[in-house]
Image (cartoon, rainbow, N blue to C red; front, top):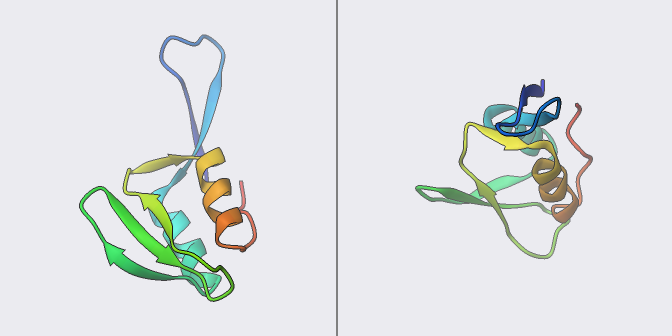
Amino acid sequence: MPVGYCAPGRRGILRRVTPLRELERHLIENGCERVRHGSRHDVWRSPTADRPVTVPRHREIPFGTARAICRQLHIPTPPR
């Protein structure tokens, strides 16, 4: 479930984020597999996508980044 917090220096702006574990669970449920595990980024591949996609290994990933990762892998967007 995405979590939100106020971005520093921006009053009243709520930044939506997706926890990394939930994004990984969403990728696995949609048939993606981790190709390579790095120290700062992982490389994932989908059976329907024609290229690998890099996923940052932060605790929380901005929702727009998670949505872009899913688009590149040709899978549905993670739930908000």
